[in-house]
Structures are given as structure tokens and as C-alpha cells.
Length: 235
Image (tube, rainbow, N blue to C red; front, top):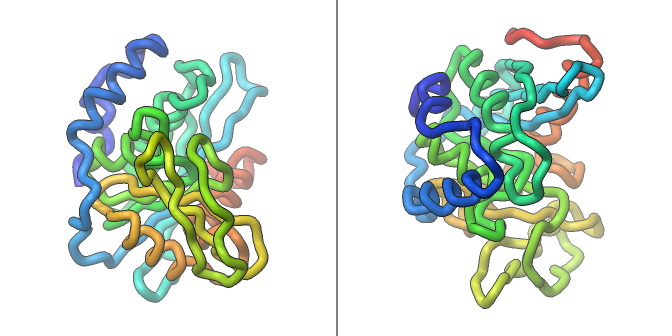
């Protein structure tokens, strides 16, 4: 895994939306969609919230680290970063990743896999937040989104674990996965160094009842606590 602080310097972040789209296309060439995760001992969930009460706005990133396969919560870390990129659909990684990298840098242990609350390959340019973060850190990642960005699909079966392909322009870009029987599906896609089939397996392993898998659900709750001012440092 690359040093998260060095990853911030792998490309410019002070870019226009047009430059950001060009960077996504350029960096997509580094993406690996096969299984090259190696041994997994530590899994993290990452999420970002925004604080509009601060002049200019801030991104608040939270990362929660778990043991694997036991799913024991080991550590949390958070970071606040000024917002320097506007809200543009399809370019959220440029708004969120600097804060995520700062939070990852505060972890005492290195994650072997990161669940991202957002899209991976299921993206107009096939380079969503999970792909971008995975390539920057050279760590396996999975996109685990609560809503669809693009693509068409057939409704999956009602049982937990049922899934159907998410297809865009004739290409399978993700999976529409029923993580809990009868619940609305999640939209799963490869990030980096994890195949779609393996991503689905890992998401189902991380499901413990609620619709949203444990890593991103816990990260979401943690950043909400940080936004309220309850916590902001690593522990």
C-alpha cells in the first residue's frame, strides 16, 4: 500500500471539472479488475460527510478498520479537509478522496481491502471513487453504493444474496445485490484488484442483518458522530 500522504501528490487536485474527467480516463489505464487482493487480514470501511457550517465547506472522512474474517472493530480514524472541488456528478472522488487519504494515514494498521460508500467501475468513465482510491493507494477496493448512478438491470430475486448484472452500453459494470431478503438492493462494483464476483462474495460476508454492509454502515455512523463534534481524532 502506498503512503496515503504521498498518494495525495500522485496527481494534481486543483483541477477543473474538464481536467478531472481527463484524469479519470488517464488513470483508468492503471485499474486492475481481476482478483489480486492476496491475503486479507484487515478490512476498512470509508465514508465522507460534509459540513456546510464552515466557510467554504469541509469534507469529514471516517475510516473504520475491522479484523477479517472475524469482523471485530479494531480502530477508527477521521480527518477534516477544506472543500476545494465543486459538487459535480461523476467527479465526487475529487471532492472526497483527499479527506479519505488523510483519515487512512491516521490508522495504526494498514487495510488490505477498503469498502467505499460510492461507485467503483459502475461509473460513466468506469473510474468511480472506489477505483480512484484503490489505484492511488494500490490497495484492493469495492464500490458499495446505495443508489444507482448509471446502467440498467432486472430486479434481483427477493432472497438475500440474489443479484443481477448492472449493464451500461452493453457492458456489465456492476451487480444489483439483495443484501437482505426483501430489502432494496445495493449497487456493487469492482474498485481495484477485486473482481465483481469476489466483490459480491465479500459484501455478503460483511452483511450482518441490515441492508448496508457493516464496514460502510459503521463508517457512515462514525462520520456522523464526527460531524456532530463527538469525535474527530483517531483512537
